[in-house]
Length: 115
Image 1 (spheres, rainbow, N blue to C red):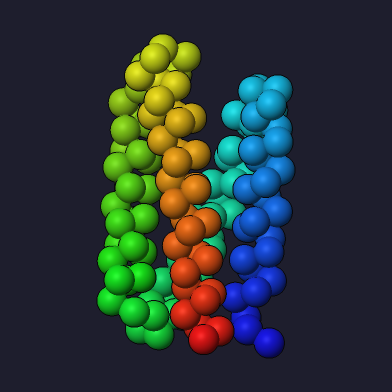
Image 2 (image 1 turned 180 degrees about the horizontal axis):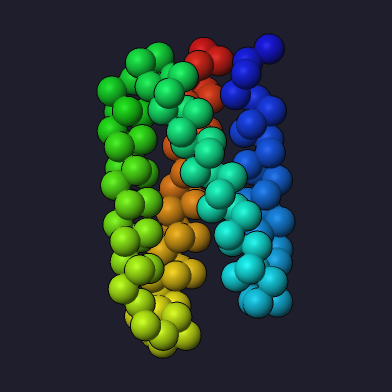
């Protein structure tokens, strides 16, 4: 059994729960913190254990994920009002887009590792 499968399933479950909670907006915004922490820890695990085992394309995707994550995190520090248009984009929309990108990246890693 691949060690990525349980982690992928957990990430997928948390991602889907987050999307469903966004139907009521505020719970989705709050749960996004849990999603972010889960994906951040998973990305560290992927990078540490599987970086050399995946294709160059997937490595570039992983680098792109880390770049996006760092940019979004730094941008959040400079947001004064999170409920302004720019604040909503940086604090809620960009992290969810990054989370979606991470799910694609994780899927690719899992496919490559499983063969």
